[in-house]
Length: 484
Image 1 (cartoon, one colour):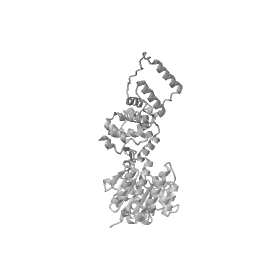
Image 2: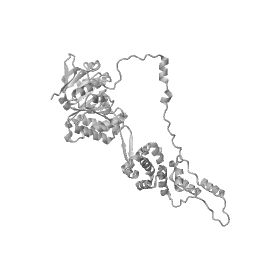
Image 3: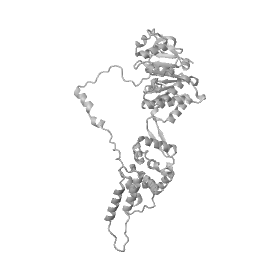
Image 4: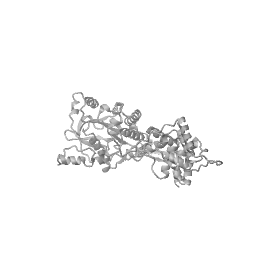
């Protein structure tokens, strides 16, 4: 089986080849400024070796997804999967020897880094029986193996550095051959770059990057000036898989194309300033209109002072008509406990009030309506109020009883948001948004809601599925019995 592929021509028009078997053992580093042709080089290498070896491409810009149009590559959109699914996919990639492109262009930068690190780590941790040879191409490697701490979180940096170091330092024994491409050698972690034995250096202008490239190629400072003068698509190659001496190579043609914008000049539209101005401003206000968001709930009212509360009670007592002689004062109930609780739950900012203030208000309303509430203590009130906020009292009795059975062991302080999730699931709706859960919980802090969901998941009350794109779905174990 052949292992030589042609990546381009030298200055004399002779083909420059790369030994894929040697590449698997010695790894490759590609460097060049933006526009030097790095992606074109990687595409040529991947296309020429597609029928020889399994390929895994970490693609932060979505440039290599077009490989699937010409070869048997599977495109994995990183934004659509959770952490566990990414790990499982990586295991299956190694097991079935599938060539894949992990497209990360729909993710924020830090999410890209964490997704790629998770995927690489799972490739590295595959069982021994799945250690088949594979090329692992990481474009824009300075993102995933930075030389210095940047704006990313420290745990993210450690995670991605460990994954990249394992790939380049220890991956060979597991069949993984790292191919890393970077715009700036100075921004790439040295322990990652140093593990490559093959180099393809493209056009570079900054002295620090040019000097590092010259050092890797074994060139002196004067010879390093050649790197600055390289044309687009021209590289200097060196290494056991390419050449024992530095060789200039012009990268050959490719079949698939990337997503880059047009580099050549194209004719401008034939329109005068007035016409162009109309095109720019037509329906601009409608397009720029933002969705109307509900204003945040008003701050909870301050609890009344004892003196004011006593004065109000006295005034209401004076306003009542005096009973006739020999008659006991009669009061006709004008509602029920459920109605009182429902009216309280529907008021703006009700859940933001302290529990003691809510309980006093509840007792006062019950007295005003002649509703017996002596049997309802503070603990019972908190649970009944949570049911009212979630609208559980509107379910038919059988379904309500099943929901109450599910919530029997839930702590009072997290009962209201849990019931909001259960009520939505019982109605066949998506889980409430964070703002709605915050309102049920009586908080304006998104962090508290995230911690709440983590707590509910750890206790087995809910199951949270969140993909790298930020889409979250929540399921409730046992909800099928409620909906039956």
